[in-house]
Amino acid sequence: MNRIICLALFLILFTLAGCESNSTSDVATNKATPTPTAASTPQPTASPSAAASPESGSGAMKTTPSGLQYQDLVVGTGPRPLLGQKVRVFYTGQLTNGTVFESTKGKGPVEFSFKEVIKGWTIGIGGGNGVEPMRVGGKRKLIIPPELGYGSMGQVGIPANSTLIFEIELIGVKNTSGFKF
Image 1 (tube, rainbow, N blue to C red):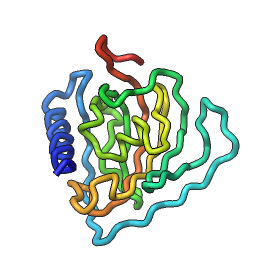
Image 2 (image 1 turned 60 degrees about the vertical axis):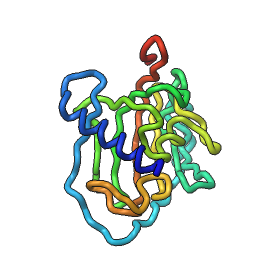
Image 3 (image 1 turned 90 degrees about the horizontal axis):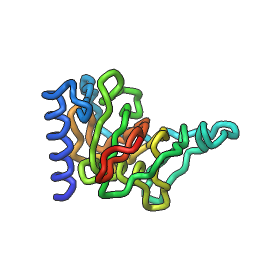
Image 4 (image 1 turned 90 degrees about the vertical axis):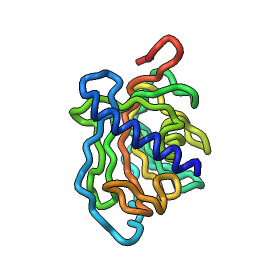
């Protein structure tokens, strides 16, 4: 039931964003044509890159016990979000077959609280379960198993039981005095 409420809020947020195209707090989405698949797609395996500096990311894909995989492509230096705060991000979401189902590229950032998104985003951005929260200025790759995504429900353009791949750039954290960049 909780997943359905979160999903409904997420969809409402994206729908409302389509009506307000020039606001700085727009939630923008670029839906791709759905690619139906009958079964769950396998998770890709990540190959660690050569030693990386903190500014360019950790280089290695890490896996949590829940199956969430994450890799810091760029380690931010700004504030970390707290679960009650709103964050502002740019992102691209794709299926394991490479089909992009959503992207904010060319549309503007998305603003949300962690109550409005799938569990894989909450953990992958806000931290928990052994994952350090992102910092503003950071860019992270998330590979989210179906259990932390949309599960058997699927979405428009996202088949049921899909593993989701996101590249997320955290550009702001909103506290009571506004966004910190």
